[in-house]
Length: 339
Image (tube, rainbow, N blue to C red; front, side, top):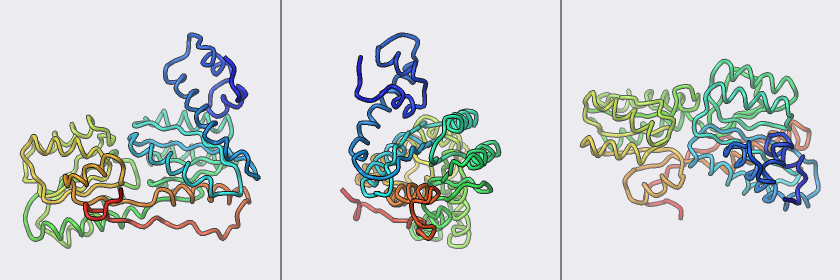
C-alpha cells in the first residue's frame, strides 16, 4: 500500500516507529488495534493539516495530551482545528493523545516518549501528582515548553495555565445553588472525576467557601473518583447516596451527568437544582431537555488559541507582551443555550 505521506512523517505524527507504520499500511500482523488506530488517526491528522502547509512560517510539532472523557477531548480537538487557520506565524502540526482515564504510569510513559522523540511544545491536561510534576520539569529543562489546560499543575516550570478560573467557577455554582435552595436543610451532592485534578479541587474549594456562608443549612456530600465516565461515576454516586440524606441539589464538576441523573432517579431523588460543567454534546442535550439547570462553560477556542500563542511565544514567534487571558465563566440555561 502506498501513501502520499512519507512513512517517517506518519511515524513522527503517530509517535511510533517507521516499521510499525509500514506494518499498518501493508495490513501485516503483530500490530495491536490501538496502535493501528493511532496510525490511521495520524494520517487523518496529516490530511487535515495539509491546508496549513501552504502557509508561510515555521513548522511546530505540538503534542496535546488529555486525560478526560471522550466528550471533552473531542471538543478540545475541534477547538484546536478551528483556531489554527487564524494563527499565521507558524504551521502547527498537532499530535493528539486522548485517553478517558490515564494511570500515573501511563502519563509518565507518554511524557517520557515525547521527551525522547522531541516536540516543540506540550499541552497537558493531567493530574497534579509529584511524579508528573517532575516529568513536566524534565520536559521544560530539555527545552520543550509545557502549558496546562483547564486544570493546572502548580509548583512546576510549566509556561502557562490556560483555561477558566476554577475557584471562581465553584463560587458561582454555590451562589446559584443558594439562590434556588434558599434556607432549606438538606444535601448538596458534589462530584469530581478524580481527586488529584487541581482544577476540580479549586472548584470544590470555591463552592464550599460560598455555600457555607450563603446557605448554612445545606450539607455537601461528595462522590468523586469515577473518572467522569458513566459506569465509574454511577457507582461512586450510588455508593455515597446509599448512606441516606435528601438531595436538594447537585454540582457536577467532572461530568458523567446522564449517569448521575439515572442513579438519582433510581434512588428517588429529584434535586431542585443541577449544575454541570462544559457545554459538550451530552450537557447540551440534558440542558435542552431541562434535566439539568445550569451549565458553567468557558470558551475552549480561546483557550486553544492561547495554547498555540504561548508555545509560539516560547519560540520567539510572538512578542513577550502577548496577553493570554483566563477564560470567563459563562452561565448557560435552557433559555440561552446555543444551537
